[in-house]
Image 1: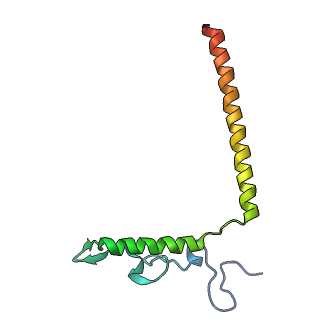
Image 2: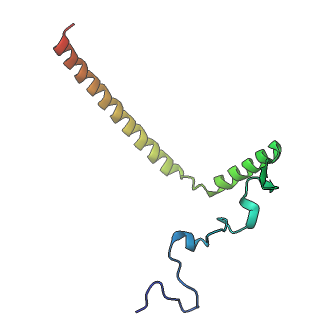
Image 3: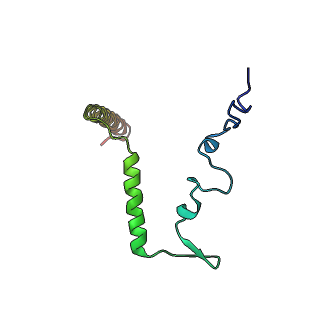
Amino acid sequence: MTDDREASGDGRERPDSAADRRGRRAGSTPAGDGDKGRATAVRDGRPAKASLPSRVVRFLREVVAELRKVIWPTRNQLITYTIVVLVFVSFMVALVALLDLVFAQGVTYLFGT
């Protein structure tokens, strides 16, 4: 029986953490693509701001990239989730209304009107 940390048959070590599995190491960027992930350029040790249009374009590009990662619910899932939310909200409204009524009666009993 082999230990999980021993080298596998192909000569590579098994990653110890999720970061290792993604290939992240100290000093590297998440995607390992050099300076591509940096928000601003650096000149003379000071960060230089990118122009507003380039920042807006980059933001929109990143929004589209994130929306492509979303797993959208099917119609049946959407209907089910909507019903669950409506039932839960109805229950909470009824609970708060009941507690309000009980506390109002208690205050009336204690202090009178």
